[in-house]
Length: 274
Image (cartoon, rainbow, N blue to C red):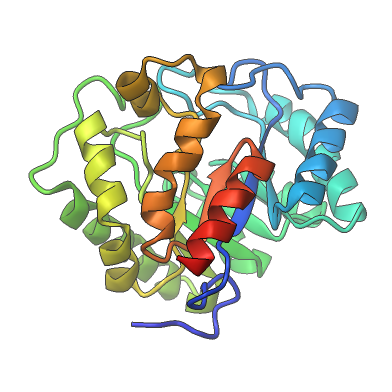
């Protein structure tokens, strides 16, 4: 089930696109506080683009397990100036948010993708804002919310349930007037999943992509399941991330969301020719 006209759909033999993570937060699990200042955030976004990121994902609210919510005004203050500066520099930007007003202002500032971990469910106004925005939308699966999602994740068949959920969200988007060619899907590695669930989803990325017929984005960079397997601290997981991402890459995944762009570019280059 190919969607060859979709701008993010990866053709055989080509490299997956890289989404660089830019956390403008004080408490993200990986690099919290490092890019809270606008100047440093913009410089890091430019560096990731120079290293090969096709798009830079700007977020102002941590979604790590146990994270607390951020007020809308604070999130706007963190992300909008960064989005505006990066877009003005000619860099493609996605806005990582669950808030409709943050989506609206980020798109107005130049963002060309909305990346919503709640798949447009957390804010009642999100669907309408997304529809009107005209930009690409990434819909992610999660079970629960960041405060509770890792307490006791359970599935009878994790892959089938993730596919079914994402299909429902895609249908809601289509019903709201969002063109299919604007949609991407994300199985939500680490969002309400055990280590075993994450590993199963990685093995099944090709199945998920084929079932939904949409570009698949996968984000596993530095996540806790890698720490559980390797015993490595968050800031030591980049190599493990690049090794693990070969599993979805070899199944044709279209976009990988990463922290270390240069390292993952090598993985993408290798996967394209293997």
